[in-house]
Length: 137
Figure 1 (cartoon, rainbow, N blue to C red):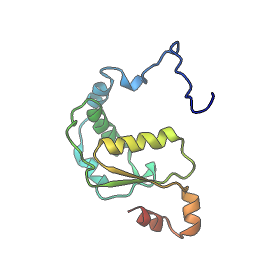
Figure 2: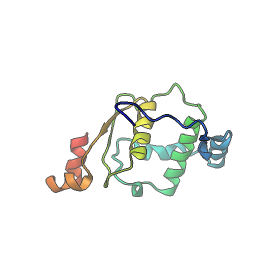
Figure 3: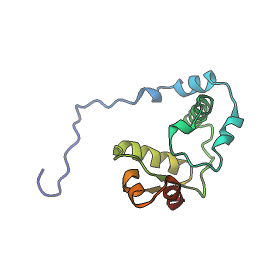
């Protein structure tokens, strides 16, 4: 590559969609999980620091809700409007993971705050995880 010239896309390369994008897959997932929307109220006004905060039943309802969004059932909804999602990974997360979180948040109408430092770096300066969470609020 010379100067500011970008590499060319290889036209021979076949691009594939992820399996989840197959037609009908989100609908099948949503139909397989019984609706228990009251479980989602467990997430109201809570910081999510770890997936360990989710019970199996709550995770199923999150997956069911996500499938509904994937199907376009809530296309005009912006449930995160006026909220800010802060991301702080315990290690240097792969950019794809961070970008997928950012995109999901923005698609739902929210704003996104990405913290460049790792949790370990922040905790070395702040004594508790609650203080770190407060900084991101």
